[in-house]
Image (cartoon, rainbow, N blue to C red; front, side, top):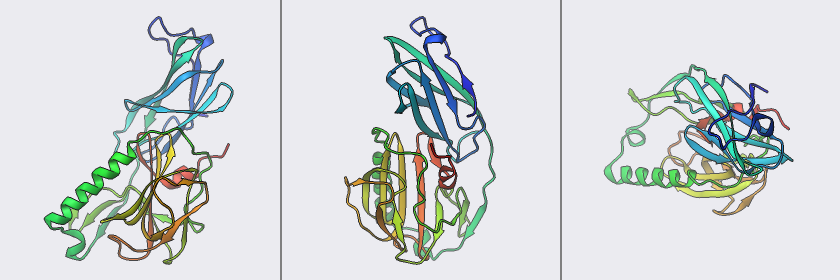
Length: 282
């Protein structure tokens, strides 16, 4: 299960190693866009356990007495090289900490050159204001931290899952744009789309780029994003179970044909959904 490190001693308030935590990661050399499962074992119940990654803290879920699980990710634009994953909490009243070092590996992404009608690539001021407001609101919702509800394995959002374009460096009408942080799945309009894990609908509405869109909060900083739906069948705040239908494939928003734009965000950034689905089940 990757690297397994004992307790890393810090200040004198930290417990001794034989009374502390151990941490393991699913990969010690994750590549750009990779999700990483973090597991913690303790000699008892840990209070206020926090998973630290990229200077931010996240909750973990207890999977058995003294065992905890979390999910982090390497963003597709992260710098390569060494990085540290850490966990902290209180065990028998003493503060404990454990660390694991990972080495972020490079990954080559395709370059995708697209030619779009001017109305789909150049926008007037009113449209730019709308785009900015929608991006800000989505960012606010994606920053919420709730208790983890996801479970491994995750379910693919459609039965015929044939993804393309994750991380593609897009050049639109000769101008470089942001990399594609999701996968595109080309399917007939009306194909059912389902939830990949338990959660709550964080957003269900219309966006300029995404069209009819659904964002689900799976807890612990894990979110799934479905764009270009023909229509959606859920409401904001609705509780969702793994496999529930959330909508149907369409071509709303800035889309040139029916397909599902599907993305996943985890603590640390945007990850490749295909690699998330490849994580082994428990």
